[in-house]
Length: 260
Image 1 (cartoon, one colour):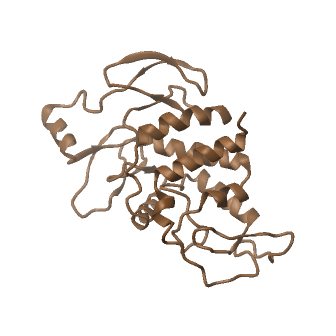
Image 2: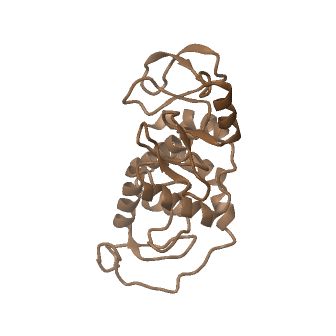
């Protein structure tokens, strides 16, 4: 019988590996030349009661375990963890390793991290249909736009008709052509159409639902700054979004449902 923490470890390991963050940075590890004798967040001296967290990938050692856990908690709350959580040093863009998380974060916060990461990932899946219950974060992977099936949400137990609606079902031919060519793109949350002038920033706010989203990756966020930070991280990481989202969802959702 797998423990709760073991299950979370498998989920985070799959997600970390799927984005190729680990592979991208395994040859780019660099040693920090700055050493601190106290936490740069709470300013407590490092001693036998206040332990320092030394980041595996960048070797920054500037934060204590309590502050690091709080840092992760805040990032998860603000949903600023895509394409992956980065070092707590404000000038560092190197991703936090799996051991850094497992060794310094409580299981409950690890579960929250995995839960939020999957939520953000599933938004990008074209065949994802959200549960009809407002308070529920989960949903279904529909097979095709035309099919209708009555299913039960495995998270909240709500029975509902699940149908993947094609975003261009009710659009005229000219409009559909512009969507197909990418001249017009649809908000990943509400499917409201949007256009972007050449040279303008890829981050925009939906005029209908108000969500901030990335024109290029369809990633969503609660603010311009959170998505801007994500975009900068992705540019630093390289091409980290070339992975099979549906495969991740199919393999990780059942595991997460067992522990959440």
